[in-house]
Length: 89
Image (tube, rainbow, N blue to C red):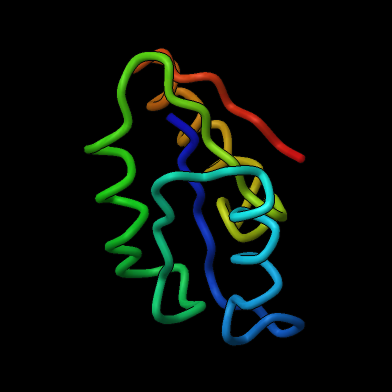
């Protein structure tokens, strides 16, 4: 399963560009945050709970997925325990 993740940013405040990209890659499930804040990222939490073995995660920009290198490493470690394939277009 291809899973997409989008979060508002300055250049894409409504996530429209990200959603077009994620859909063009064939994502069957897309988690979209309602705000750009690094706190209370409920959709990211939902994604991490729902991801399963064999899933592929697609994000348009790494900074929408993680706010820092440290957080990126933490998220990748979480995903590694679930063994999905991380895909960055």
